[in-house]
Structures are given as structure tokens and as C-alpha cells.
Image (cartoon, rainbow, N blue to C red; front, side, top):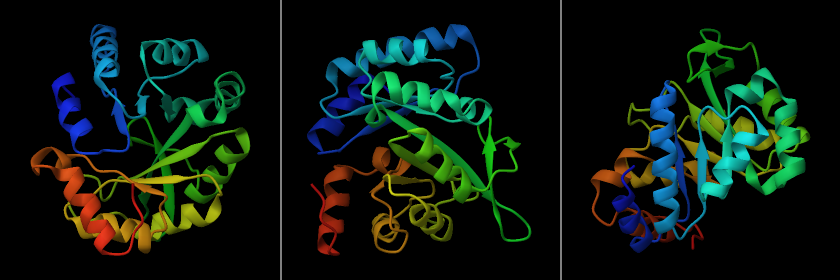
Length: 221
């Protein structure tokens, strides 16, 4: 995300910005650090940063660059104690566990790691309960089957995870209309709804999204 894009989101009343590093080289990682530092200078809402976070040292570095929260995914699955370590040092409110899940042929859901490439054998329901117990402050939930396909959130998956925990669940993946945001809250039960492409291609998008949600009875800031 270019730093200039933050200016628009600040003006359009976005509540939070999530930036994930999807690169795979150290050279690109250094570039990512530069992006985060520049974003934090302009960002006036909470900034959550994720991708390739494997240690408390990495978390500390990102927080010093200006992040307010960190999102961990694969590293949390490989070493769940990392969640507790981060929560103990930086506070539960700082720790977001990102979860990628996919529906299997039998109708059950499974958690995937490594950018949604590797099945883990974990149930989203049990994993959600585990990360809550370990100290996570939020869950960032993405359904692989819906991400990028413009058919809205996987409301069945979302509801299952929401009902399994008491910490906030943020829905992500598949938004193409404002109705999808409304459904994420009213049907899926999400505490917050996130989107990507629709917010980049629709003028004054966050303001329009919030107005639409208010018109449908959802109390938003």
C-alpha cells in the first residue's frame, strides 16, 4: 500500500488498516519495513502489521516502526507459545492471530498455514479457542474459498468461529458489495468486517460503506 493511500483512508473514516507482507525474500522484507515506517507517519488509526513474524524481537521492531498491533499466522501454528510470549510482553490487545481456513470435501473446515498452502489438520473452532486461551486479543479470519471470488464472507465458517470465542473476530475475504459487510455482522456475527479491493476501487468507499451499514441498523463509528 503506498503511503499516499493512507491520506485517503484517513479522510474517509476508516477504523483500522491491516498491512500484510506477502513477499518471500529478505530484500523485499527490508522494503516492507520502509513501507511500514512511512505509513505510520501518516496513519491516524490503528495499524496492524503481519507476515513472516516469528519472534518477539520481530514484534518489537515492528512496534517501534509504528505498528499498533501485529498479526501472526504460520508461526503461531508452528509454535503456539509465541502467542503467549507476545501477549505477556506487549499485551493481549497487541496480538492478532490470523487464520486461513478452507472447506473440505466432507463439509468440515480446516486451518491452513503458509499463505493458505499447507493443511494443518486443525479445526478452526478448536484453533480459535486455543489461541484465545493462549492470549490472543483478536482473530483475523479469512476463508480461502471466498478470498478474491467476490461472493461475500463464508458466513457459516464465520459464525462457527465467532460462537467459539469471546475475543473479537474480524471477517475478511470475498467482499464485493456493501451487503456483504452487513451480512458479516448481522448473520456471521463478526465484531468487525474488513475488505480490500472494493475499498481501493470505490470513491469515498469507507464513508459509503459505513453509511450503508448504518442504514441497515448496524452501529458503526
